[in-house]
Image (cartoon, rainbow, N blue to C red):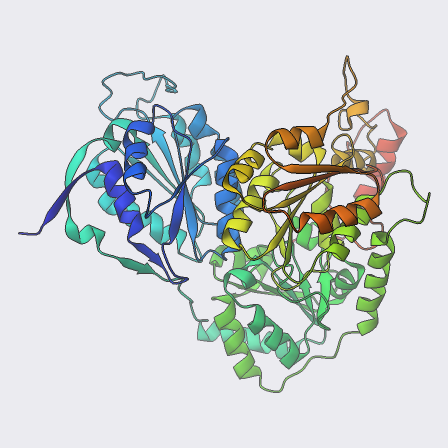
Length: 610
């Protein structure tokens, strides 16, 4: 008769997770972020305390942002490790839904364990329970179903025997990767069961590398050999496949230029001769010129989001064909592409071996040098008295000049993603952008997660006052844990990015900048004092020269540093870029809107569905 261990369901979950190993070394689930409430403190809380040495538990200040930290950790670890997040029921659980959607869109692993209602329904309805008048099986946690790659409700202790392996299988599957949610009924957490000892045997989780199908490989080879002007669009899958060096070797061997998405940026070091920079709406003129002329667009590990494709108006060559290399067939087949469903590194290795000495015509190096000349102009320090307030581009230049090969710059929403994508000269692996969901509030928590994954890196978080106001509480967590991040907070008094978009679509400046919003009293927020109150060392700097000096001082700090600088909300980089499909109204009393609509209708003629 097999041996058993009598454990509560929560204890069994904690013990099982300590035995799940990563090919990167150590546990696959590195630890738990937790905010306890009546839905998880008695069961999961007791279990995490019991295994706190093997499975660390970190306390967050907001359920959404501690999940952001977990997601950023997984991204920085190239999906080789992940974290778990547990909350109470009701509002605590629902605060996780935004973070679940972020992980879902970005294909990143995180284990979510929200508490749930009582399985036995004894105290029904329990505090914070959401009731459906027509469905007694529904709880607030059903909101996780559309934003989870795997969802299960643990209403009996033995459910873990199948649910936990399925959850980890999802988190480690390169094609299905995304959030796994185990809605854990609170009475079930504390219920004991005789679990087989064999269930807790150590297991190593490997990330599989599917090889290309021979027929698809032959078709891809024929397309590459026939192309006169191919271009590679490098996506996040290049990083997750650990294929950066393989991509470099492939591009060099076959003289094919590379352009980078937000997730793919830093796959090649910025000054590699075949790296022609960022592509798409926030792209470089060099990259977009190649994309417009390409007769074969080779997407590698990209889901071809509208910012990458210029809302499918960027690739204008009438002979253009798509070849998409992706581990997920859903992504590989988009827009009628010729699919090569495979791991990125495996596919590139087989393509290189079969292509032999085949080389495309060398791209013009002048495109790249001309672009960086333009980028250097806008990131240069301002001349004395040249502008009353620095621009975001000049702030980026200051961070660039103060950084080094170990600097990782990160952001998520607002002005910074577009400007950083265009202008940041990234060392390999030196760029972390959450631009699948572009979630305001990811930044500070995300920076903390990156630093936990890469303690040797100098992590610089760049965000505006709008994002800071949405989610800043994990700055206190970083201070409490002694996690060193440098936050560069640009105060342009509102949502400057959307204000520019509003005006570009013909709208009047309205409800985005603080001074264009309805208010009884002017808003004057002392961000430096606020950040200092949460434990960060802070400086309010005046100008770019002062910012550069502050950035150098920040390198000596051991905890979080926040540097606040006032910036101009108006300017953005005029060079580069591509059209983005944001529809102005077809009818309006404003002449500016009608003119914007006319420009929009003209631009839409370049869109291609094929």
